[in-house]
Length: 504
Image (tube, rainbow, N blue to C red):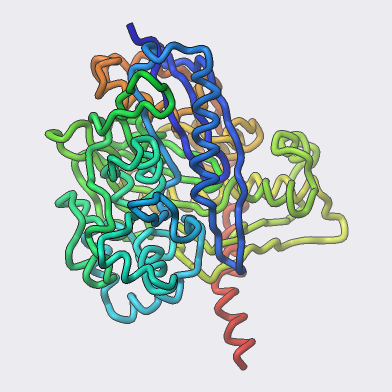
């Protein structure tokens, strides 16, 4: 009888694999970082081969010593908008993966807005016109890599987000498949009809033959014996990382909210059967679809481009900290930031600003500023950005969260969680299992394979690890947030203004 579900969690900076038992507890896990490439300012790339190899290695590590018969199913969750294009015959990528953070298509987005086509995209896809999403990245590959247009038109190439790339590899090229959540992040998918949109594909000059088949988030996709020679295991769950996290948090009722503090920061609210059109810079997206015969569940989302990546920058580029874990002690060593605000707009600003030309800014520095203040300002920046998104959600939906459930690497930082509770004025709950993204993928696969009966069985597995109650006065809270808003204004439009100055 199967004992586990395997979750493959392919993130922006690392690949991990986790075995979950029937109680939703981690039985084994492994993680491996892989290189980031920055060929030009604002450009971010990955090597798709390195992604696959790292994902395969960690999966093999957690499966070592486990009988293949003990694994009921495989669930996949992934960094979402990142694009890979490859040769169908050789499975060789035509170019590096273009990462969701990459801003190379900001100019293309400007032209889309000039054409007025951004209104069509907003209405049908629920997304704003921004370089963040996959559609312009695919168009860039077709327009800029020699020979790619001809090969794509001839049906020789395949393209997709990272889930499609992993499924292709796991099945030896037999399945070119994505799910509704990942498709909904491409800028090419109509979230109301749940299909690729022919008019949008025509506008971008993207052949439909390039794109994967779209399936639900929880259903049998294909068999794979690549990780377990001699016994095929069903691939039965697929969801983008943030939607998987929402499911893993058991945010199954409309109005429930979670936030993930990873490389970026992503706040999602379950909106049920409705896909609300945001008036405040947020996104409408598919949350999940449980089986091909079921309707989609939707969410409203605020996507913040840089969160934990700012801590990595302090560690790797400035070498102000040795590890992310030490930032909590550094932040607590000072009573405040000394007036310092850190806007980590390394690749522009996402929700609710959508400013591709914003750049990272640190303001308020004095002679007395030290690394404690900078570490604290970097942690506080995650909470400030989250507050901006929560305010937008309240304006769009008329609902403020009564509690915020959190996960991701930075959510293990007690200082940050307490400051987040203070800044929102609501409790913050951290689950006992912080790997909720992987858990969500496991749940989706386990439901489709019969490992778990239904969502009601899963509900009893949610366990709170820590709860942070707000303790800051409303006056101080609003004063700090006003200072943050002033700092953001100084970061906005910086790259565009700099370009104009250089042209002069």
